[in-house]
Image (cartoon, rainbow, N blue to C red; front, side, top):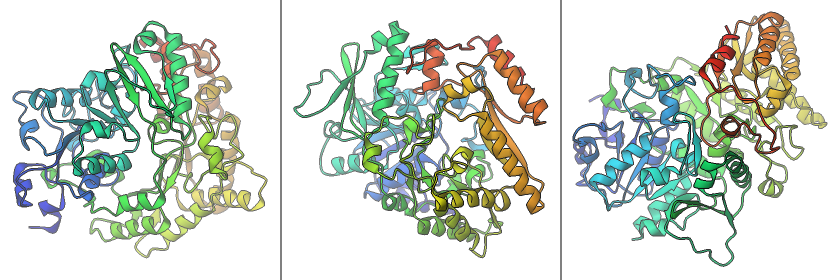
Length: 579
């Protein structure tokens, strides 16, 4: 058999594959709403390999059929320790529906992009089936769907305030945020003979309790109850403000929210993992390929990231509409240059590699190695954004190490070109610090990016032109985009290049009116002569500042009313200005 198709290189997905390893059973069965791609860009692969790295036997059930006799849920029988469940890389409702609540026709995380391989609210559906089949086996849920729904939240698709996903799914434990560290701890508890009850004492987990007794010395923040928030939108936005503030600092505060006769308890998070720990994750034995069961089929999401390299995680931009800071966090964790170069060299050994990296970046491409100068100050800071309204003076925005990384990657003989496909924060790159060396490095970064790492078109995200809307988005003034475009054009002229900027814009964001959209069209289409391509109607996703404004029509931080385009007609009218 071709080496790539050696089934034992992947985690088992069938009983036959399990038996090929000489196993009679497994410790953990991991259910996922995504196809199984054994690549570190996919959360299922990372968590599966982490569990394996803990010395446990783990199997993966990708996209189980939730109809009929539930045979996919029974294929491995009862695990020795627990079930793990994730909806996948995306929230299943965002995956399924457009901002206009129309059903999407494809799914990038499914073979051949086929729609319908996972249910709506996949985490809840999978958990309910498992509880029906194996009521006494613990279930641990994680991933972005679980993470962003860990507390009571507004749900756009049902247009109602919902309780924690723990309550709806019946899961025993929820892992929020990036789960490598806490999953190791859970595995250690079970390996040592502990139970799911022992796991509830760990950091970065959430659970439901019939009662909650406050231990001496534990700092507790009691949130407004689910019922209070559902009744009164003002209380809901107050709750969000508290949650966001607590999530943006490193502390030991336990969050508690009453829901009916029980309590949802959120244990404080772990500190971000170290560079060494992140490097170890990328050193795990990923095949970097889809499971052989998909041979002859395309998985669009894999095609998009196959020749890309993730350099860091986290984002301190704190954009109002973005879920990254509430899931990955605002503290940047970067891989070492050695780890990144090792991965690039491994990619160049693939016979299908043509010499071009599609991306070298992260949530925001140019935050590599950026962190606060005084990290103790960062731990106490409650600012939701380190970039708005101005870039924090404590933040080190030096792009020097990133330039060095780009040059080191490009020096590898098999690399013809490395492109930057992740979003670039031009406001950070253009920020004048007053430090001669840093400001020079940042100017050099912009030049290096434009001349050597753009595939003819550079995508950036000014998001809007209205100053008032941009403030609510936590984004810089559109004047800065004009300044960046002028610099972009000048560098291209001097280098003899004919490249384009492709700006990204959002319609119907809270605060945005038809007049604001008309102004956007005038400035961008007529004033700058852009043909708009990268555009999107605002989609309210759980646990974001913008979603709270959308639901309540109130700014959680000022208490002021905010205009919101809610009806289908209003949203379509705003979107029409793009075209």
